[in-house]
Image 1 (tube, one colour):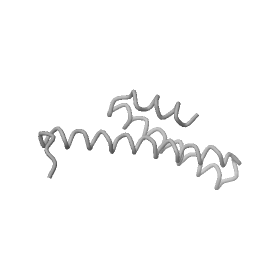
Image 2 (spheres, helix red, strand yellow):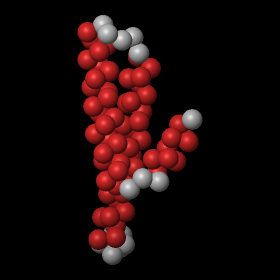
Image 3 (cartoon, helix red, strand yellow):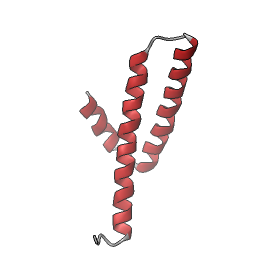
Image 4 (cartoon, one colour):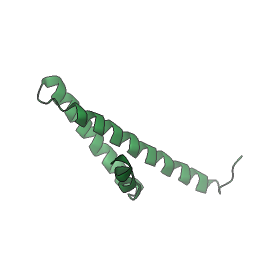
Amino acid sequence: MSTKRFNQLKNLSETELQTKLREAEKELYDLKIKRVTGQTNNFAGIWLRRKEIARIKTLLTAYAGKHAQSADGGEKL
């Protein structure tokens, strides 16, 4: 399942990933507040959101690395 989800995220553009990141962070925040106030026992949802955020940040870092490399002309020191 996680590989499938990661492949879906890989097909998104950088701006779409940033939007997904903001949404996932908001959902994580909401889940944490609900857990603290006793409105939910969905601990798996918190774990899943954290994993999704990590996947998105990994892809954004890869995009940033590609852009930095292309700006340098692809030269490595």
